[in-house]
Structure formats: structure tokens, C-alpha cells
Length: 66
Image (cartoon, rainbow, N blue to C red; front, side):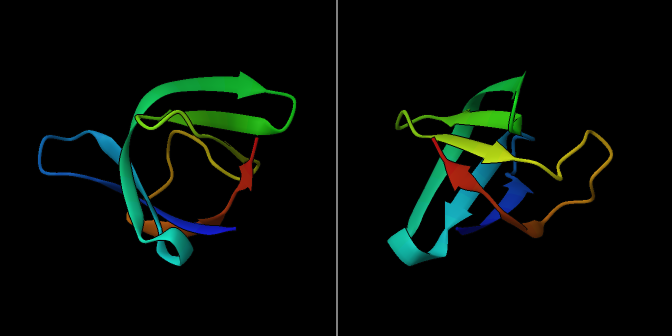
């Protein structure tokens, strides 16, 4: 699914999912077999295989919901 990552006014990483009209803050980041895994405030876990610490934001990525 296509999602947009950005930093909000407080500097917290947030994810916007256009198909669901959902915007949530990231509460946890881990590395797994599928790449970087972001856990959202609503409990969703999204896996990103092309995300690293030096990525410029805001940007749209393909993510896999776990």
C-alpha cells in the first residue's frame, strides 16, 4: 500500500494512509526481516524495505501491513 511519511510540528514521525484517510504517529521503530518496521499509535505495523535514517521527508513509500 502507498503511504506518506513525514515529521509533524513536534518532530515526531507520522504516517498518512490515503486509501483509509488515516494519519497516525509512529510509536516504535524496529528492524526485521522485511526491513524497517514502524508501529503506529493505533497498533498497525507497517514494513518498509527501502527506508533508512537519511531519507528525506515528506515522501511516499510502498509499505506492507503486517
